[in-house]
Length: 218
Ligand code: GRF
Image 1 (cartoon, rainbow, N blue to C red):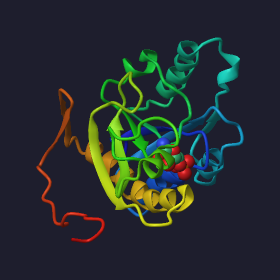
Image 2 (cartoon, helix red, strand yellow):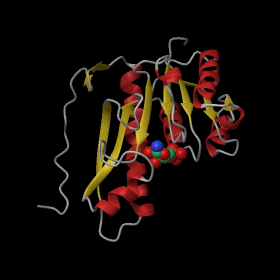
Image 3 (cartoon, rainbow, N blue to C red):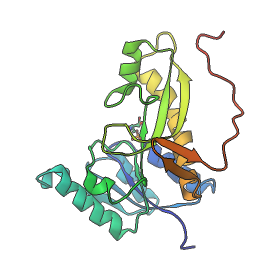
Image 4 (cartoon, rainbow, N blue to C red):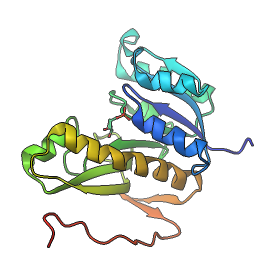
């Protein structure tokens, strides 16, 4: 099959979201191909995960480039070499610039561990705990030039529990990350996503089967 959506995953760390995408492709739930995984960090476990599945794993060191735009031009060259159609940021700890964003209009996704627009930026889980919210979660969104500001594709909410630490809340949120990221990619792959202004229109319209999440229960 050569009409599979080619995904390029950019990751800096553990790569558990990469693994979730790989797993859904392996079990047939997601029809797409990971064309390459690129990391700015040579030691990223994400690269090792890619190698285990025979996925091209590239280390592109940002320190070798004078500025963000130069680094993004190198990323773009690599993504084009692998004919990437959708870029999935999965724990990629670099701010990307219009060099990349303009080359992939509404075709770069990111996953963020909070219900955006709440708690953008770093340490979102800690921000949620410090604020004292009762519900947090994760968001997959298209990337625009802002920090975690692009159109929202899918969100999943989890309760914040008494006694939660950054670790326990992060773990609860990650379970959801691993569900919603492959789902968002699947919707993209099937051509179900259209962006109108800030809103991502999903077709056919989703039918919700779950009830409201209320914490504490009412
Ligand atoms: C996740 O929490 C994701 O929401 C954030 O970075 C983390 C990446 O985790 N953007 P992993 O490397 O996929 O395990």
